[in-house]
Amino acid sequence: MTHNLTAETITLAGHNGDEIEAYRAVPTDVERAGSIVVIHHMPGYDEATKEIVRKFAANGYHALMPNLYHRVAPGAAPDDAAATARNLGGVPDEQLVGDVAGAMAHLKGLATSNGKVASIGYCSGGRQSFLAGCRLPLDGVIDCYGAFVAVDPPSEFPLKVKAVIGEAGNLHAPLLGLFGAEDTYPSPEQNDALAAALAAAGKEFTFRTYEGAAHAFFAVDRPSYRPEVATEAWGEVFAFLARTVG
Image (cartoon, rainbow, N blue to C red; front, side, top):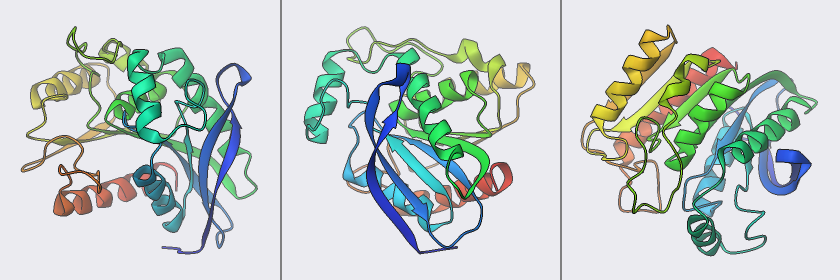
């Protein structure tokens, strides 16, 4: 494990070449490293998720988090930007995929990149990480309690997206899914449906479901945080990255 890193806000060419804000952290004491695109949760491009980006760098990975709300709320506080995005129904899937593709290209262009890139996402970002893995040539995909992968949101829910379980056959990379047994979106039954679709398509995947945890158990700044579960799940994440991106 390394600890030396640099972290900074940068500008990234995202979907359709749009210039968007992103947060990057890279280890400074490695000759070659794998990379990971961090997809923030619905509450936004916030300090807690930036700390996750730095955690990846501290463990020897290039990490980059695009600000998915930059177009609709440039410079806004995370809560305000998230409210604006929710009012618009969330981030369009095509735009999300384009932003992740831009992040991948940036990471692969780093001088110390080994050419391999994974993605990880939390909450709505978990669904988006899965979607990116179905549409882009990622080397590893991590879905942390991604809501609305297997089912559409309720009609009253602000996120206006559709289930993406139908794209399971297009998954390009091994998938790690980390879920809470007490979660509702996604529920264990929804995760079972996704597992069945992936198995039917012959895809490589590993799901871990943690008792005593609900949604957002990684979120250190929320009541849902479960330190023991998060610690165990971080171990799964880093073991998976070691296998998939080196």
